[in-house]
Image (cartoon, rainbow, N blue to C red):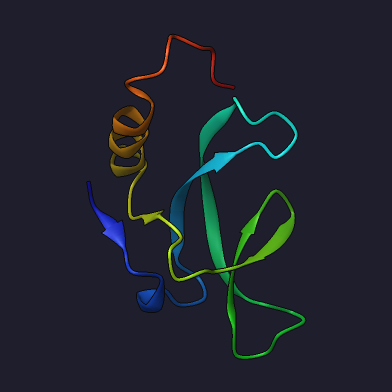
Length: 86
């Protein structure tokens, strides 16, 4: 699984994240996100995902490819019963 260190990203990079729906905690999926400069916090990078800026945390799991994110997703959720992920 090829993760990216959050300290190594720069504006313009595309990354993939495993996004857990905050309204339905049992639903997670892989989404592409863009690294951008946070508009309200100059000098800070942010994930732009679902038309929202998310400050990048040190422990965020960012992946260089959709395949790497899928491998991590499969490892994380392999012990759970079959569910439909949207």
